[in-house]
Image (cartoon, rainbow, N blue to C red):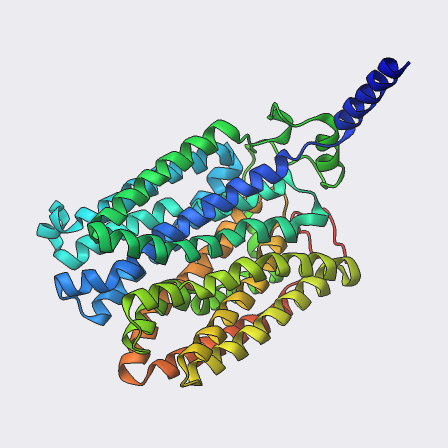
Length: 449
C-alpha cells in the first residue's frame, strides 16, 4: 500500500507540474534585459574611456561632445526603420542582425584612428562616423524589445515587463564603469572595445537560438502559459505583419504627439547620465578615475531599483484609475521627484550628498520611463514596434542635443546651470503628458478608460 500511495503522490505532483504554466515569457524578458544592458555597455564605454581618448588625441571638451553625440544621432534617425522592420519581419531576426552590427562597430571604435576615414575626414570625424554607425545598429534594440513585450506579455503586466527590460539600462550602467576602467588599467582603452564587441557576438548567438517571434512557436511554452498570454491579449498580434503601418492614424493622434514630444524632453535630461556624468564627476567634482568609476555607477544602481518599481506602480495605478489617469500618475510622480533631486544635486557642495541625489534623479527618471513604453503598447498593439521606434527617435534626438548643449552651458556658464536646465526640461516632459491618453486606440478599434 505504501508503494502504491507513493506512486499516486508522484503522479499527482507530475500532473500538477504539467498544469502549471511554464515561464518562458519571463525568460524572454530576461534576455531582453541582457540585450538592453549590452546596448548601454556599448554606448557608455566611450564616456568612460573618453578622458583617456581626450588626453591621447588632444580633443577639446566640445569636440568630445560632438563625438559622444554622433552615436545618439545615428541611434535616433534609425529608430523608426528598426521598429518597422520588426513589425514586418519579426523581432528575433532583426535583433540578431542588429546586435552583430553594433558589436562590430563597437570593436571598430578601438581602431578609429587607423581607419581610412581618419585620412579622408580627420581624426575626430573618424571616431564620430564609427559611433554614428554603432548607433544605427542599436536603433533596432528598444523598438523590437518593446514589440516582444507586446507579443509575449498580457495587457495587465505591460508596465512590469517593460520596466524589467528597461532595468537592463541600470545593470549596464552599473557594470560598464567597473568593467571598462578595470580593462583600461590592465590592457588600455582599446582592449575594452574589443571585448565589448566579442561579448555582443555571444549575446546574439544565445538570443537567436532561444527566442521566437511568437509564443505559439516556442517549443518550451506549454498550453497553460500560451492560454495565459493569449487570454490577456486584445488580439493575436504575434505573427510578423505584412500590412502597412497606419502612419496617417499615428500622426493624427494627439496622444502620439504628446508621447513623442514629451519623450524628446525626457531623452534630453536622461542623457546627462549616459554621456557627461563620469567626466563631470572627475573634472568638476575632482574625483579620481577610480572614484569616478564607482560613483558613476550609482545612478544605474538606482535605475535597477526604481525602474521595476515604476513599472509596478504604473500597472497598479492603471488598475485603480484606468489607463489614462494611471499612466499619467506614474509619469508625474517619477518626474517631479527626479527634477527635484537633479536640481538639489547640482546645488549641493558636498560630493557624497550630490552623488546620492543625482543617483535618485536617474532612478526616478526611469521610474517614469516605463510608462512611456507601456503607453506605446496601449495605443497600438499591432504596430507597437513602429510607434515605439518613432517615440524613441524623438527621445534620442533630445539625447543628441543634450551632450552638445550641456557642454556649451557648462563651458560658458557652469555645470550647475547645465543640470538646472536638464531639470526644467524634465518638468516640461511631464507637462506634455496632459496631451497623452493611454486609453486611446489609434488603430480605431475603440477607446478604454
